[in-house]
Image 1: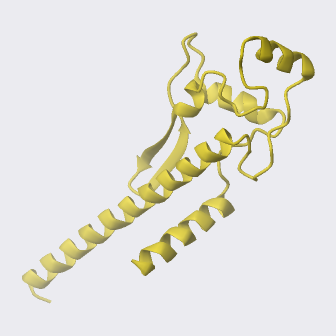
Image 2: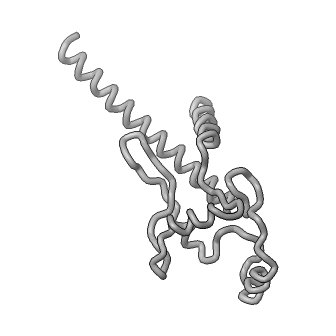
Image 3: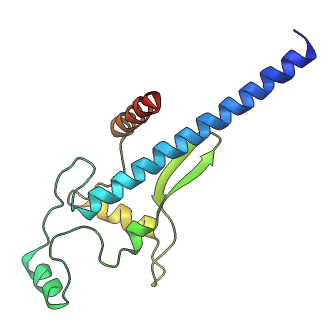
Length: 142
């Protein structure tokens, strides 16, 4: 193979790696959109409704004019802090960043919420695979 051929092959692989990285980021961004949509509708990643608030807590929220069905958005700060982050060349994650006004980490708050009730909002691998499969299917149609 000539030097020119090697340069073209190298350019091809650089372009290919960039395209794969961009596709992964798009898939994760679509996953994040789905997570926010589920949470806004009061459901976890399994499509199950969040467990209801206790009657006493519903009463407190009603007095403050707040929603009485859970959607994990007392102030919306934690759900708004979810971002797609690049960890390495082909590794992207979804997770909360930053802290609330009291200095409590949004990641800590999410872990605490996920430990009780059924407040699971981050995806598991089977769900991500379905989103990726749908992405590839739509890509082929275009």
